[in-house]
Image (tube, rainbow, N blue to C red):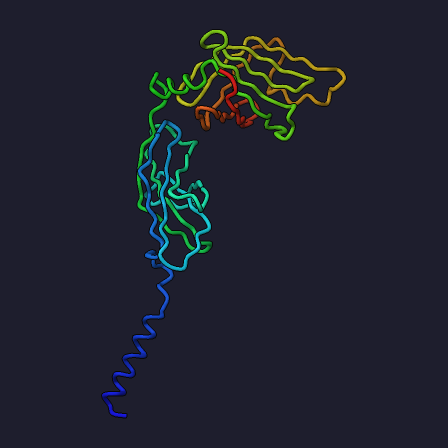
Length: 260
Protein backbone atom coordinates (compact mmCIF):
# COMPACT_ATOMS: atom_id res chain seq x y z
CA UNK A 1 0.00 0.00 0.00
CA UNK A 2 1.33 3.44 -0.92
CA UNK A 3 2.05 6.12 1.68
CA UNK A 4 -0.85 8.18 0.26
CA UNK A 5 -3.35 5.34 0.78
CA UNK A 6 -2.08 4.76 4.33
CA UNK A 7 -2.55 8.47 5.08
CA UNK A 8 -6.17 8.55 3.89
CA UNK A 9 -6.96 5.32 5.74
CA UNK A 10 -5.63 6.79 8.98
CA UNK A 11 -7.74 9.94 8.49
CA UNK A 12 -10.92 7.92 7.94
CA UNK A 13 -10.38 5.95 11.15
CA UNK A 14 -9.77 9.18 13.08
CA UNK A 15 -12.97 10.76 11.75
CA UNK A 16 -14.98 7.66 12.62
CA UNK A 17 -13.69 7.77 16.21
CA UNK A 18 -14.50 11.47 16.56
CA UNK A 19 -18.02 10.96 15.15
CA UNK A 20 -18.87 8.28 17.72
CA UNK A 21 -17.55 10.11 20.75
CA UNK A 22 -20.26 11.03 23.28
CA UNK A 23 -20.66 14.70 24.24
CA UNK A 24 -18.77 15.83 27.27
CA UNK A 25 -20.67 15.13 30.52
CA UNK A 26 -20.80 18.86 31.25
CA UNK A 27 -22.16 19.77 27.82
CA UNK A 28 -25.66 21.24 28.27
CA UNK A 29 -26.59 21.29 24.58
CA UNK A 30 -28.66 18.10 24.63
CA UNK A 31 -31.30 19.55 27.01
CA UNK A 32 -32.50 23.08 26.35
CA UNK A 33 -34.29 24.49 29.41
CA UNK A 34 -36.25 27.73 29.25
CA UNK A 35 -37.24 29.80 32.30
CA UNK A 36 -40.47 31.75 32.01
CA UNK A 37 -40.79 35.24 33.45
CA UNK A 38 -42.44 35.00 36.91
CA UNK A 39 -46.05 36.19 37.15
CA UNK A 40 -48.79 36.59 39.79
CA UNK A 41 -46.27 38.02 42.23
CA UNK A 42 -47.59 38.80 45.72
CA UNK A 43 -45.82 39.58 48.97
CA UNK A 44 -45.27 35.87 49.71
CA UNK A 45 -45.68 33.92 46.46
CA UNK A 46 -45.12 33.87 42.71
CA UNK A 47 -45.93 31.69 39.71
CA UNK A 48 -42.79 30.43 37.98
CA UNK A 49 -42.26 27.84 35.29
CA UNK A 50 -40.53 26.74 32.13
CA UNK A 51 -40.06 23.92 29.68
CA UNK A 52 -37.32 21.55 28.56
CA UNK A 53 -36.56 20.40 25.01
CA UNK A 54 -34.53 17.19 24.78
CA UNK A 55 -32.16 16.69 21.86
CA UNK A 56 -30.62 13.27 22.19
CA UNK A 57 -30.95 10.11 24.22
CA UNK A 58 -31.82 11.72 27.55
CA UNK A 59 -34.68 10.61 29.81
CA UNK A 60 -35.81 13.30 32.25
CA UNK A 61 -36.99 12.26 35.70
CA UNK A 62 -37.83 15.64 37.22
CA UNK A 63 -38.86 19.11 36.11
CA UNK A 64 -39.35 22.17 38.27
CA UNK A 65 -38.07 25.54 39.39
CA UNK A 66 -35.51 26.49 42.01
CA UNK A 67 -35.11 29.85 43.70
CA UNK A 68 -32.96 31.84 46.09
CA UNK A 69 -32.09 35.40 47.02
CA UNK A 70 -28.76 34.78 45.29
CA UNK A 71 -28.26 34.49 41.55
CA UNK A 72 -28.18 31.14 39.73
CA UNK A 73 -30.10 29.14 42.37
CA UNK A 74 -30.01 25.36 42.47
CA UNK A 75 -32.44 22.76 43.90
CA UNK A 76 -30.22 22.67 46.99
CA UNK A 77 -31.50 26.18 47.79
CA UNK A 78 -35.25 25.76 47.26
CA UNK A 79 -37.19 23.83 44.66
CA UNK A 80 -40.72 23.02 43.51
CA UNK A 81 -41.18 20.04 41.19
CA UNK A 82 -43.97 19.20 38.76
CA UNK A 83 -45.07 16.35 36.49
CA UNK A 84 -42.43 15.46 33.89
CA UNK A 85 -45.06 14.84 31.21
CA UNK A 86 -46.70 18.24 31.60
CA UNK A 87 -44.96 20.88 29.51
CA UNK A 88 -44.82 23.78 29.60
CA UNK A 89 -45.24 23.80 33.37
CA UNK A 90 -45.96 26.38 36.06
CA UNK A 91 -45.18 26.04 39.76
CA UNK A 92 -46.45 28.28 42.56
CA UNK A 93 -43.72 29.01 45.08
CA UNK A 94 -44.87 30.26 48.48
CA UNK A 95 -43.48 31.25 51.86
CA UNK A 96 -41.47 34.13 50.38
CA UNK A 97 -40.45 37.26 52.28
CA UNK A 98 -42.22 40.50 51.35
CA UNK A 99 -40.28 43.22 49.52
CA UNK A 100 -37.41 40.85 48.68
CA UNK A 101 -35.61 40.22 45.40
CA UNK A 102 -35.51 36.57 44.35
CA UNK A 103 -33.80 34.68 41.55
CA UNK A 104 -35.47 31.69 39.91
CA UNK A 105 -34.40 29.13 37.31
CA UNK A 106 -36.29 26.32 35.62
CA UNK A 107 -34.49 23.00 35.84
CA UNK A 108 -34.60 19.48 34.42
CA UNK A 109 -33.01 16.40 35.98
CA UNK A 110 -32.11 13.13 34.28
CA UNK A 111 -31.33 11.21 37.45
CA UNK A 112 -27.68 12.21 37.33
CA UNK A 113 -27.35 15.74 36.05
CA UNK A 114 -29.28 19.00 36.41
CA UNK A 115 -29.92 21.25 33.42
CA UNK A 116 -30.87 24.88 34.01
CA UNK A 117 -32.65 27.67 32.22
CA UNK A 118 -31.87 31.35 32.35
CA UNK A 119 -31.75 33.13 35.72
CA UNK A 120 -34.85 35.34 36.11
CA UNK A 121 -35.36 37.76 38.99
CA UNK A 122 -38.44 39.28 40.60
CA UNK A 123 -39.24 41.27 43.75
CA UNK A 124 -42.10 40.36 46.04
CA UNK A 125 -44.60 43.05 46.93
CA UNK A 126 -44.48 44.94 50.20
CA UNK A 127 -46.78 43.87 53.03
CA UNK A 128 -48.89 45.93 55.39
CA UNK A 129 -49.75 49.59 55.05
CA UNK A 130 -53.18 48.92 53.59
CA UNK A 131 -51.72 47.88 50.25
CA UNK A 132 -53.15 45.65 47.59
CA UNK A 133 -52.16 42.43 49.37
CA UNK A 134 -54.32 43.28 52.36
CA UNK A 135 -57.24 43.94 50.04
CA UNK A 136 -56.64 40.71 48.14
CA UNK A 137 -56.52 38.56 51.27
CA UNK A 138 -59.56 40.28 52.76
CA UNK A 139 -61.51 39.69 49.56
CA UNK A 140 -60.56 36.00 49.53
CA UNK A 141 -61.44 35.47 53.19
CA UNK A 142 -64.51 37.68 53.41
CA UNK A 143 -67.83 35.99 54.21
CA UNK A 144 -66.31 32.55 53.75
CA UNK A 145 -66.08 29.36 55.75
CA UNK A 146 -62.79 27.50 55.35
CA UNK A 147 -62.80 23.95 56.63
CA UNK A 148 -60.34 21.09 56.72
CA UNK A 149 -58.92 18.19 58.74
CA UNK A 150 -57.10 18.92 61.97
CA UNK A 151 -53.30 18.54 61.68
CA UNK A 152 -53.24 16.26 64.74
CA UNK A 153 -55.01 13.53 62.80
CA UNK A 154 -55.77 14.41 59.16
CA UNK A 155 -56.98 10.86 58.49
CA UNK A 156 -59.82 11.25 61.00
CA UNK A 157 -62.79 12.72 59.12
CA UNK A 158 -64.54 13.52 62.38
CA UNK A 159 -61.70 15.78 63.54
CA UNK A 160 -61.95 19.12 61.78
CA UNK A 161 -61.09 22.80 61.91
CA UNK A 162 -63.10 25.75 60.64
CA UNK A 163 -62.22 29.38 60.10
CA UNK A 164 -65.24 31.64 59.73
CA UNK A 165 -64.36 35.19 58.65
CA UNK A 166 -66.60 38.28 58.68
CA UNK A 167 -69.75 36.61 59.87
CA UNK A 168 -71.97 38.38 60.58
CA UNK A 169 -69.99 41.65 60.56
CA UNK A 170 -66.73 42.71 58.93
CA UNK A 171 -63.73 42.13 61.17
CA UNK A 172 -65.29 39.29 63.13
CA UNK A 173 -63.88 35.78 63.09
CA UNK A 174 -64.81 32.40 64.57
CA UNK A 175 -62.36 29.55 65.08
CA UNK A 176 -63.90 26.10 65.52
CA UNK A 177 -61.99 22.93 66.39
CA UNK A 178 -63.74 19.71 67.19
CA UNK A 179 -65.24 16.34 66.41
CA UNK A 180 -68.74 14.96 66.46
CA UNK A 181 -68.43 14.66 70.26
CA UNK A 182 -66.38 17.67 71.37
CA UNK A 183 -65.85 21.25 70.34
CA UNK A 184 -63.72 24.32 70.92
CA UNK A 185 -65.42 27.53 69.81
CA UNK A 186 -63.62 30.87 69.91
CA UNK A 187 -65.01 34.19 68.66
CA UNK A 188 -63.15 37.42 68.19
CA UNK A 189 -62.00 40.13 65.82
CA UNK A 190 -59.09 40.10 63.41
CA UNK A 191 -56.87 42.33 61.30
CA UNK A 192 -54.72 41.46 58.29
CA UNK A 193 -51.26 42.92 57.75
CA UNK A 194 -49.45 41.48 54.76
CA UNK A 195 -49.79 37.72 55.11
CA UNK A 196 -50.42 37.73 58.88
CA UNK A 197 -53.88 37.46 60.43
CA UNK A 198 -53.92 38.66 64.05
CA UNK A 199 -57.02 37.57 65.95
CA UNK A 200 -58.06 38.55 69.47
CA UNK A 201 -60.61 36.09 70.81
CA UNK A 202 -62.88 37.48 73.53
CA UNK A 203 -65.27 34.54 73.72
CA UNK A 204 -64.01 30.97 74.30
CA UNK A 205 -66.24 27.96 74.87
CA UNK A 206 -65.05 24.41 75.45
CA UNK A 207 -67.48 21.51 75.43
CA UNK A 208 -66.90 17.79 75.66
CA UNK A 209 -69.07 14.69 75.62
CA UNK A 210 -68.35 12.87 78.88
CA UNK A 211 -68.77 9.54 77.11
CA UNK A 212 -65.82 10.19 74.81
CA UNK A 213 -63.17 12.02 76.89
CA UNK A 214 -60.29 10.60 74.89
CA UNK A 215 -61.49 12.11 71.61
CA UNK A 216 -60.72 15.69 72.60
CA UNK A 217 -57.53 16.98 71.03
CA UNK A 218 -55.30 19.78 72.26
CA UNK A 219 -57.03 23.11 72.89
CA UNK A 220 -54.41 25.31 71.17
CA UNK A 221 -53.83 27.13 74.45
CA UNK A 222 -57.46 28.24 74.79
CA UNK A 223 -59.04 28.37 78.25
CA UNK A 224 -62.78 28.71 78.54
CA UNK A 225 -63.83 32.22 79.44
CA UNK A 226 -60.36 33.71 78.88
CA UNK A 227 -59.30 36.07 76.08
CA UNK A 228 -56.54 34.94 73.74
CA UNK A 229 -54.62 36.51 70.86
CA UNK A 230 -53.44 34.21 68.06
CA UNK A 231 -51.63 34.98 64.84
CA UNK A 232 -52.12 32.97 61.67
CA UNK A 233 -49.45 33.31 58.97
CA UNK A 234 -50.83 32.73 55.49
CA UNK A 235 -48.55 30.29 53.67
CA UNK A 236 -50.72 30.12 50.56
CA UNK A 237 -54.11 31.51 49.61
CA UNK A 238 -56.02 30.88 46.39
CA UNK A 239 -59.68 31.25 45.48
CA UNK A 240 -60.52 27.91 47.10
CA UNK A 241 -57.55 26.90 49.25
CA UNK A 242 -56.09 28.46 52.38
CA UNK A 243 -52.95 27.29 54.19
CA UNK A 244 -52.12 29.01 57.48
CA UNK A 245 -49.74 28.36 60.35
CA UNK A 246 -51.00 29.29 63.80
CA UNK A 247 -48.81 30.60 66.61
CA UNK A 248 -50.06 28.62 69.65
CA UNK A 249 -49.08 25.08 68.70
CA UNK A 250 -47.24 25.80 65.44
CA UNK A 251 -49.73 23.68 63.51
CA UNK A 252 -50.33 24.27 59.80
CA UNK A 253 -53.94 24.13 58.67
CA UNK A 254 -54.86 23.29 55.07
CA UNK A 255 -58.38 24.57 54.52
CA UNK A 256 -60.85 24.40 51.63
CA UNK A 257 -63.42 27.10 50.94
CA UNK A 258 -66.87 25.58 51.06
CA UNK A 259 -69.34 28.38 51.73
CA UNK A 260 -69.77 32.06 50.84
